[in-house]
Image (cartoon, rainbow, N blue to C red; front, side, top):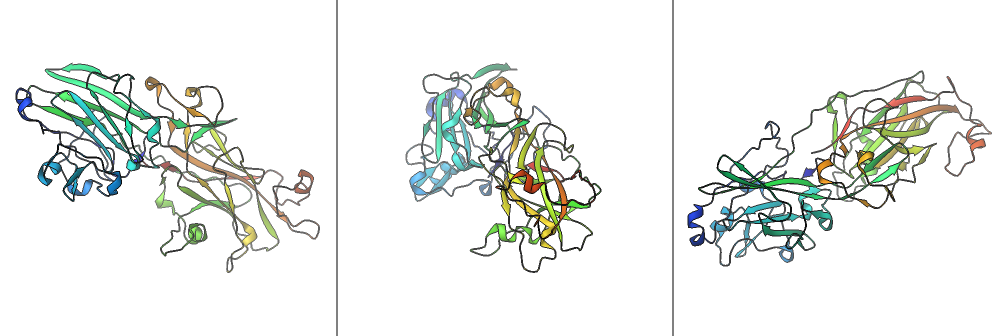
Length: 424
């Protein structure tokens, strides 16, 4: 699964002094260079891209108590910045990101910051390809530090025209929720492949960056009942503002799609009746669900609302939002709800058992994530009477719901959102 890094996935390369002089150059380290947020790599598959050292690409906002020393004792600011670490108050420390160092002594130092991704990495779930002595990290609240010989911990060695390459992978486990028709996760499935490349003249450290996914076309569907599903994009600009109160002040337009979201980001959904001015009409939602493609009847599928009520099998329960807002014409023509962004998991790759337990995937088959999400709702209209208010309650019995007088046709209309993608 691709995930959004605060400073981007690292892509690093630097030369050390000649290996023959390694014993006399004790403070040599490779320089890691970060691809900044919003930078997109256009490298072909299997290739990497390097950039020069740039101060703005680092994140040095690490609290003093959480700082982990980088480099040797008494290193100065120039030497600290040359190994791409942060320097403040006479101390050199690792940045809030993923830092790889390959030493001339054939050792790997890999430092992973908890806040290097959005959402944050669960450092307790990270691991290398192999296990054994020195393969477990030393963890703090904010960092996990791996320090091991290049030949250990599942590292694969290859010879590329005189360059000895040691490659390994760091990944995390994630929680999977499974339903009858699909499985999802809201955890960041962190995964990064890194290499230490030893030449006859120096050392190169490389971390691979996932490629950007293309943006598929958006899709909408309308039935006999004219209805529309759209996403609110209003944001809080003032202190003390409640996002739910302003989310529907503005909406994404056609040119904004596909909309990108980070895992666990709130997604604000509105369904409304079009071209009707009868105040007695009430819009009712039956089921709302998400799929990985624009076809509302495709799989995998994840239920957000069942028979007008939130899907309580979801640990992040969909929240129904109030539409009784002063100044909104015909509020009964609207339904609004919010859910936390997720991404689909290939259910065939998960281990059987309790669906709410942590699930680990074999490294050779980790391709569990589908990053496209489309939202669908089936909706209908009823006319309020003295005997029936048309207001659905999750505690209401089925015979009461069925008493509502429907318009147009008994079959509900299905409306579909344009595409939402999980941001890289």
